[in-house]
Image (cartoon, rainbow, N blue to C red; front, side, top):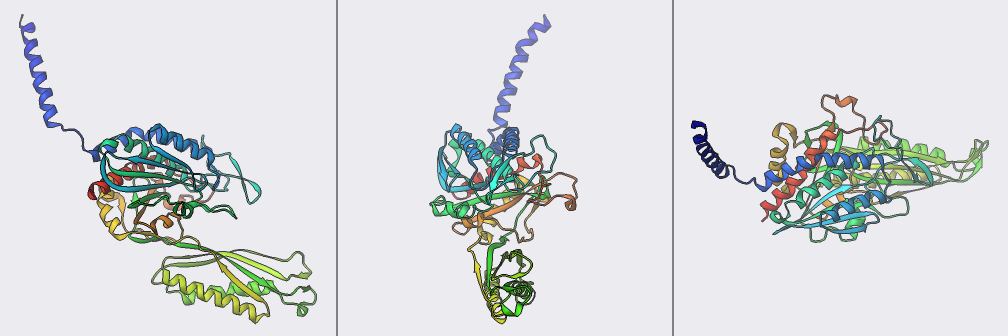
Length: 438
């Protein structure tokens, strides 16, 4: 009898407890919700990453990757634009509340590199590069960028009614450079109007030498401008046994290479910023006993300061032309437009630093990473509107930095464990910026 009488009392206590719980455990905030949803989508993102890694595609040839992305964005109910800047995809998510238009960017292309990493999902793909069949590998982590942004799209689409403003998910082709004779990449996306009416843009790059669970960035110039150059040297052909009968463009080329080294060591203010002038290829001649009439040099110039870039360009032109003239040859320098400096807008960087700290944890966020002489065509977006670009850790925990294979190499590897932080951070950058700018 006592036991049966206690049942109504027990039920009453459970009801009171439930009511108290409802009052004391409020609905999670939007900031908290996107973090929870990020964890829920992590396994999907890892699966997408493995699929994309196993099926890489070269610049302006990202057909299957683009189809995968477009199908996913459509499944989320977004407006989807395809064939943007050749093979790019743009998804548009309109929030339920008024606010800014925010861009999120991921690059899709792979590289002509043969993978050596032993993975169940390693690439065995082939592609065509400069008319030759080549192995193809995601040797720079773009597979992770695509899968992370697909995850962010899913997260934010689930909170659409509470989201302020509009989000444009930009899946960009040809970050590594369009094939010769083609346009491509961020520059073409800007040209086609992708960032029109956008307020800001955010981007990330996973890094094989930054441990997972870490974020790194800096205010201002973060990555260098990159300009390819060609030096054309016109001589006079002669028999190899009678060099005095001609003008030797190969000797002239060698002297240009040597003389150009002083541009960095003697004309560049290296205490201000780093700069690089590298010759990557030299061609000329057909056989041992013929002095040719033409030789060519190609290479790259990397700078982190516009004034230094101007000095280097001017000095290089002088060195090329005068060295050629001193040998009786004609030498001309052609520098392409290249990539601008990847620049993090100071105001935007300061505004979003609390987001990095909260999501990543202050002990795992480096706000003063050193600038690098690598380049990124995210710079074309950030040249037009305020941009913020950060590095995401991809190196397995406990790995020594010296043992991490560099990007663009056959042994390049980044850990799936780094992806979740990327999803959380990109999602929160959108939510937090929109709230700050309401």
